[in-house]
Image 1 (spheres, helix red, strand yellow):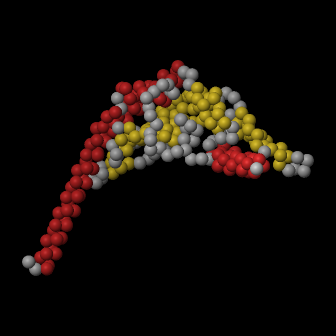
Image 2 (cartoon, rainbow, N blue to C red):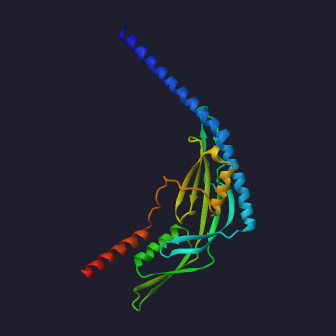
Image 3 (cartoon, helix red, strand yellow):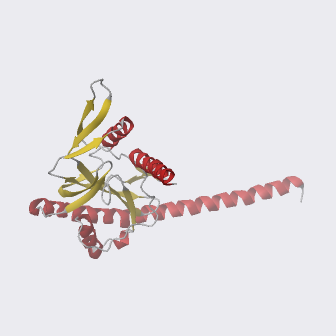
Length: 264
């Protein structure tokens, strides 16, 4: 066999490998498409129908659902009430406008994604007093970043030098349970925002075949903060520290070192 024949044989072998890989990829794609249509989309619809009914019942009955949130700069506020439930299509919110295309240019419809939204609010107004301008700036940033309405009154001495600032606020926290279908993993992602803690996101990966009557019942208990068997995922990232937390830790450390030096 000549050198050119060897090259042709090697090219033919490589092409066979490429064709085999393309066939496997196409087969996997078709399997994912089938799972998405037969398993994922019906499971997402099952969730949507159940939660739509749940929100209607909750808005009619208005059950007492107390919530406690830690508001940076103030501390725990325990008189929040969770209420005003609604189910909203993500397309209607213009949050998601996406499609996945297969190798055959068939569009995989993912427009059924939705979220359940409720509000945790308190009937009381709260006050925070700050004595350092740097901390006042951080408190303003925190309220602004987290969409908490507030007013701030600054006080000065006779020479117009800063003395203190007093913040007044009445927080209203929006809680979201977002359900999105994922084509590649043939699963449904549940993303919680501001539920367990203010500013914290929790992500669950739901398998379509596990979304049964028992699961839906536990999900309803979870959303309404009743005793439940939901477990927090182990792979969630810890909540990122705010600038206010970092400032407080730095201040506390300086005070601790100063106290130790004075005692020695």
